[in-house]
Amino acid sequence: MTATTLTSTQGAGRAGDKIFSGAALAAGCLILAVLFGVALFLVVQAIPALTAPSAEIQGGEGFFAYIWPIVIGTLIAAVIALVIATPIAIGVALFISHFAPRRLAAGLGYVVDLLAAIPSVIYGAWGAAFLAKEISPAYNWLAANMGWLPIFQGPASATGKTILTAGIVLSVMVLPIITSLSREIFLQTPKLHEEAALALGATRWEMIKMSVLPFARPGIISAVMLGLGRALGETMAVALVLSSGALTASLIQSGNQTIAAEIALNFPEASGLKVSTLVAAGLVLFIITLAVNMVARWIISRHKEFSGAN
Amino acid sequence: MSKRIDVKDLNVYYGDFLAVEDVTINIEAKSVTAFIGPSGCGKSTFLRTLNRMHEVIPGARVEGDVMLDGDNLYGPGVDPVTVRSQIGMVFQRPNPFPTMSIRDNVLAGVKLNNKKISKGEADVLVERSLKGANLWNEVKDRLEKPGSGLSGGQQQRLCIARAIAVEPQVILMDEPCSALDPISTLAIEDLINELKDQYTVVIVTHNMQQAARVSDRTAFFNIAGTGKPGKLIEVDDTHTIFSNPTQKATEDYVSGRFG
Image (cartoon, rainbow over all chains, first blue to last red; front, side, top):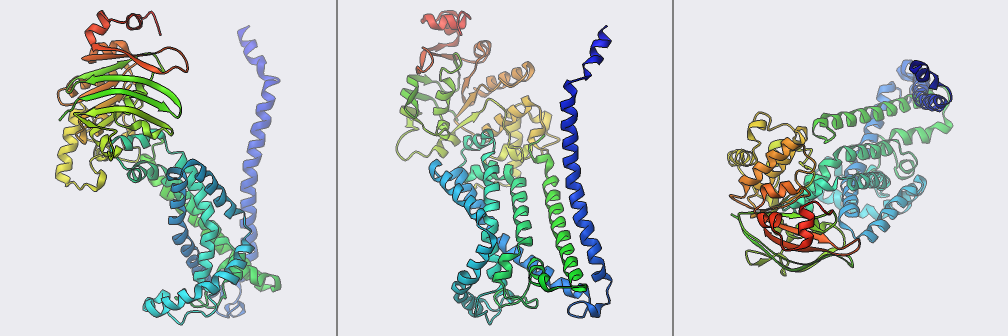
């Protein structure tokens, strides 16, 4: 009797469960399939460039000699962007979450989110037409006063269209991403931990150091990595701002190039092996982004014991 | 190392809402004072005004005087940060810093305000504070492990160790046992008995037996109804409150005929 009632409930109620679990499984598989498809496309299309005789690759010295300067250029631009954007973003996020009066905080948060809505081509145009011109006196000053540092070696670019300008434009673009994610994390800090710090006699900044920042650390790292992803892959702004060239150590001379801008500028007129070379460059960018994300996950997981999740 | 607290005509507001009305109470040094009363009667709110922790809540403010051995906590130029380093607090739910080790948790308050402390001094202080909180024997072999890995009762004693490490004058406890099992509760109650040799202790509790067990004096708070302010009904020796209170409301509450 009991056994039959237990087994007979399987009919109607279970259909919803099955449909839902099927849909969830399909969605999960779709993500993997898309990722795999992209990777497969990149590898297959890149093989001709990787196996071609070195003389046939642009530059005539093989794919490796072609790719490494633009890899370095990509990393330089992204690092400049993060070095500028991260402290500002964390500062703004902290101001919004813990310092500003509520009404000001709401308005400021809205403005920061608006920054993210501006298309990248606008940023590029702004960087090329306005920022580059305005900032070139500063470059001249850097070249004159700090020229002994290889990164500020003169003569500075007269147009200001340098990798440093591109990095600054990129930093404005990644700022809203890092800010809004950090702000969300900061707001989630348990009241309990904030009060623990305050009750010990912590000032507001000490409370932030003791409870908010440690709690938010994994979130900040994720936010910075998302920003890095945007900075690495950003195409239009760099293509417009940077007057590209060979790899140079100086950040205030024209020169350097990023992978994304290189692909965007050359793809329309490329054919044959050139297309394959550019796709191979894309593959390299894909690997860099993947590596960055894995490193970020590793950093976060290293401190799991102290994360408060246990 | 302990001071008395004298509260005179204290009103607590949340915005325009009067939450606690006209409290006057003297809290003796080196004794345990318990606040009892039904939920929402303002006893936790009032406790927070004793070290200005209510200021964390937007819109909360007070009128009146709270004197710590004659110094007004709400006097002009008084920094709440200084007040809180003199009057520590233990919360309802144990809240050790999850990213810090047991050792760093104990030292958290001591390292504030850029104070430097040598490793030797720190070791002594950690041992003394953890012994003071009856936790040393349980954690001495794992001081570098995270505080969040301890049981709830151990975490609460860690929070007490953290509070006494800064050598406060007064320790406020906001229902410190309400999230703990009976055995951990007993451990905390024993600890409170030892703490009063050195500190002034004020404890909010929902548990009348607990108030009867640990406190020297008991204050009964009550509320006339929803939307009305909480009031201090009477305060006296714990024995008197539980056996022979002067107010009818107190007698009803402690005998279980109410709330």
